[in-house]
Amino acid sequence: MDVVRAGSDLTEAASEVLIRSLADYLRDRRRVSVALSGGRTPWPVLRSLARADLDWNRVDIYQVDERVAPAGDPARNLTGLTTALTDHVPARIHPMPVDAPDLEAAALRYAQELPRPLNIVHLGLGDDGHTASLVPDDPVLEVDDRLAAVTGPYRGHRRMTLTFGALAEADSIVWIVAGTDKAAMVERLLAADPSIPAGRVPQDRAVLVTDSI
Image (tube, rainbow, N blue to C red):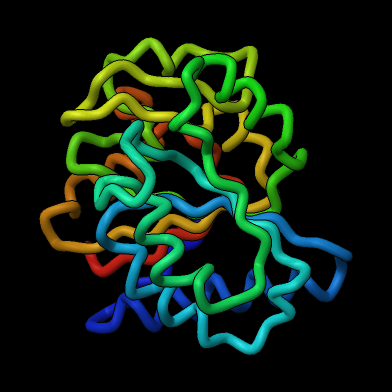
């Protein structure tokens, strides 16, 4: 995995990596797919990304994961994603259907609609080693027959998430990890420690942007 040590400006470093990656794919493809994660760290990065001079009309945005919560709820990753990015650019957004009455069937439909492979997947890193909503000890970690699935309750919400299969297929992965409190977990990520979910994500096409180390 390539590592970009961001110093004091993680937002600038991470947005530059994403802009460069998107621009590279847009040169070679008619449409480009990018899957974005939630959490607190990405929103300043996505606000910066929204100002980039890119052909957003050719970009499809998918979600890496989403909490099962009502539309517009602050807990929804989609709420932050639209406010920071898709309200400002003409990209095509593909929300995870977490308001569907049958979540398992909805996850299957979402998986079937995903491009294969996704061109760019953005991931974060939790303080317990989770990434996407692939959380420790959840049965979703062992799902190997579909690209999206539903978790059990985790920190107050069930979630829909891309599975390891979807992440393994991705053309490229951009990790964005903020905070010195994540330093030990970043070291375990870089060591590909399989005892944490993040350590099970392939690293051969990945870049890590971090101010944690």
